[in-house]
Image: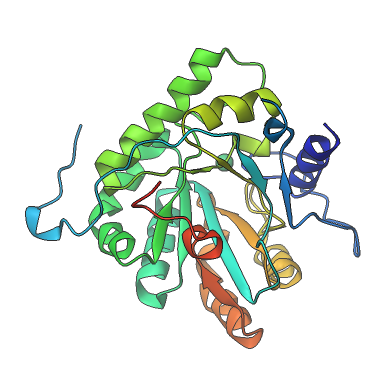
Length: 276
Ligand SMILES: [Zn+2]
């Protein structure tokens, strides 16, 4: 339970995913310990878009592998790697900007889109698919609706996740398993056990954030980028507000200056689309 509370605390200290305006996130105090990786208490408890045939280089969708999940905040071991993870996607121009940034920069990015915004994401599937095929881009599950999970009926939680998984499989040709990012970073042992039964065995939190789940200034965003883009970070950003669109070059420069190595979650944790 303590780890779970710490997990929620760490996540909420770097508030994410707020669809509604909220007070800016309080930055993590300097020197405050952030768990790099922790097991969750759950551990201790018990309209289709077919790809053209010529592009079918993606592996078949694997079966789910249910087990008790692990909660992940950062890289599993000291490394210069970072994982950039971009959630939600209710700003069409920001989604388009991130897709174009991935395409032109070659920087690995893991997107965690909500199917509720499928009209925005679907138009980029043809650009994203080749990047997914090469392993530069990965897709994680962030639920269809982005409603907070704790307290909802089990059937509603399962349906919310499975609907998003079905959309991801149809649209991008891969499974999002085993990677699940709970909306708002909000989860508990019960939610973890449920999602583990669906084959989502990595609960994806973060230890760095661009702070852009709500509108912020370019200076604020770059300040957080400078603070949190450090070796081993799982960085959280949102395709919800266009502030980041004018900052991609600066962010890329920061990554290069610090000799950081952006990777997908698959690369950082040695998971794979073929296994799920
Ligand atoms: Zn979110």
